[in-house]
Amino acid sequence: MDPFASAHNLDRELHSLLVQASSNLCDWFAESGSQAPMPDSFNMPDVHPAKQGVSNKVLLSELRLLMNGSYRPSHPGSLAHLDPPPLSASIVGELICAGLNNNLLAEELSTSLSSLERNLCKWFCQNLGLGDLSGGVAASGGSLSNLMALVMARNIAGLESDPSAVFFASDDCHVSFAKALRIMGLREESLIKIPTNEKGELEISSLRSSLKKIKSEGKKCFAVVATAGTTVRGAIDPLLDIAKFCQKEKVWLHVDGAIGGMYGLSTIASEILQGLGSADSITVNPQKLLGIPKTSSLLLVANKNHLSSTFSTGLPYAEPITGNDFHGGELGIQGTRSAEALKLWIGLRHLGEEGIEKILLDSIKRRCYLESIIDSSKFKIISGPLHLLALTPINYTSSQTTDWSIKTRSSLLANKFMLSRPMYGDRYYLKAVMGNPNTKFDDLKLLANLINHSII
Ligand SMILES: Cc1ncc(COP(=O)(O)O)c(C=O)c1O
Image 1 (cartoon, helix red, strand yellow):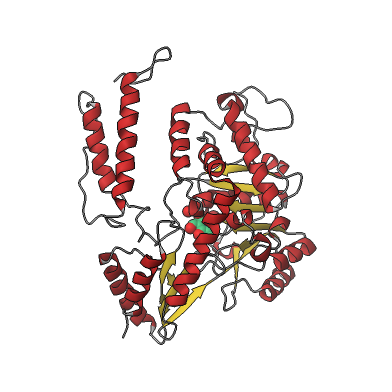
Image 2: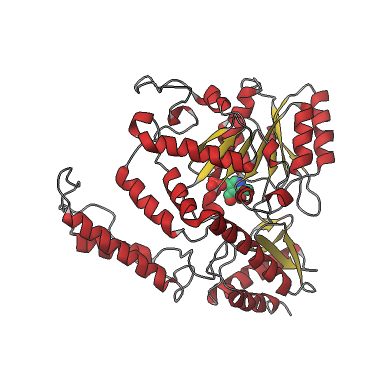
């Protein structure tokens, strides 16, 4: 096969390699159910290029080694993390994206795809209730979206060179905020953690008193982070109250909706995400729930000019864009970016509103079902309104939960169920995420039975 496809003739060898590779991928999906979430062992291909390149046949067999050694998100027992199987249409989107090899850095390198990203972000903003001035940008993961939101909030507050500036988030906020601190040159104390209530939601009264306190110390706050879907239990902070508070105090509200933000597209949005539309910025991660292949995250902002005023440095080596828009590379931290909007767009188009609703609500139904069949006389179950739950034995000491969680996770793995083992508060839990549409109620019955018998 020629290294590059001809620009004039159909490359039959590339065509045949794509057909064969796609067929192998379909086989890999089809056999996933008879395997396990994680392989027991695997072989690796050589990593160095041989003196002469290898044939397509060798490439395919080496790819097969890697596929055999991969984690299998499609297995019905793959419930550990926020990593569902990929949407079929989005796999095609990803392939085409690689073939087009456009660059979202500059409009001239991604003519239609820059527009696609802009239009798609706007569509998300409208559906999540952000106003007319809204817009957004795709980023490679929720950690990056969160970091960009904080950099923007600090910039808009004019506090970028104030080392004593702080922001607030709950005790259960994601670790990406601790990382953001380091990148932004802030101290650990610059993130003020607000306690959560028994449902894992930020305590608004503590937020009020903490802001009062830092003001009395002469410090300034550049953002409040509310989490819509915490990592361990899927709790949603009281968005409406926090939004009102932020409006009154004139503080930027960032909603980390990496987990729960996608429910803004569902009919239960008004029930569980009230206040979301009053945010200044929102992180959503379609990769975590809807099955858009990684990575797929969006940073959505109520005023899209804030993105360019924070990140635009000019792009002197690219042609200026006509109109008021900016090059993709001027809207965030990343320069060169692949057109991640493509796999998101094609996935949503294929699903349609009804398909999206079904995936979102079925995930919650599976969580509710599992919750209903776990023996609540033996286990403390923590969950919010979303699709994840965590559980730990009642009356165990912290160290007993360590032993129980290690032993139970490993016996579940032996039965082809993979749960994760987060530390939450002072003890270990097992966590199950119900974003895998291949998991049926019968699988959950089996899982609950194993868990219920993990303690006597
Ligand atoms: C609540 C929350 N926010 C942000 C993130 C970070 O997202 P990513 O892993 O895409 O960087 C996660 C990841 O699990 C998360 O749970």
